[in-house]
Image (tube, rainbow, N blue to C red; front, side, top):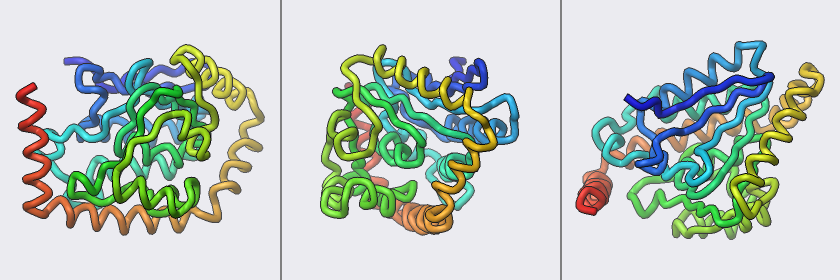
Length: 252
């Protein structure tokens, strides 16, 4: 069976690669569990100084695998996807996102929680939760208005509009946008190595201070969203909508 999460540690930099290209790196419960466990372990490992999350050169992630999601939807606050969110929030080491290609749903809402985000200009991002009968997650209610402004965030969250990597950089959701995946990878590696070579006590203290004012609010917002998300999933209309999408994709 293919390993859907590839992990490599080199010179203090842990790279986590989503490795399900035939499904556009759609995330399953098993993948969320692996990511959560790996990040929790990395948090305690002194050999890990920086973490990179990537989907490779063509697709970051298409969001949740809807078939897997319908078979085992989140019904409690310790569900795999929610555990992954907690592991990201509680990570004490810098997290860098390398985004090439599609970043849908949690592929977009993850980005505000990364310390650095580098993206390709033609990447396509969206948060189509309402279209699926769901609500936003990963504290998007808080982070997106703070980064994008309330007007733009409201449109993107309620309408599920798609935007590109250059817009993400222009709006402050990414640090820089690049023409090619190779340029994006080079920027990610350069910054990861720079952070890994920095005095670690000072780096983590600075990072903790940057996040301390908002951390309690982030945790509370994530819990409130997750509780609402569980309620949405229990709706027959939502399940019918998701099942229709699964059936449609199966016929292609």
